[in-house]
Length: 77
Image 1 (tube, rainbow, N blue to C red):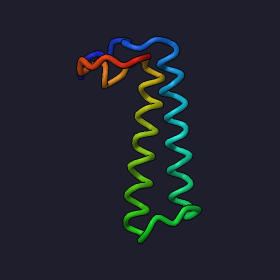
Image 2: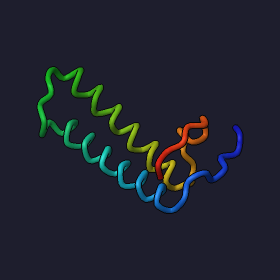
Image 3: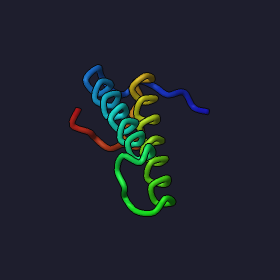
């Protein structure tokens, strides 16, 4: 696995960390049936995808690496 070089600053790390926590909270709300978005299969799919996005964003914040920037896109932060 290639080394993940730091490509975001402190503000970007905070933004990714906070959005990751937000995605995990949304996933918890969906998976605990506090929001009914349709049948059970759709709720589980959306909840698990939201949890995966949140966990990955928290990983990015902890490591200081952004996949979008690593692919060459410029982000405003």
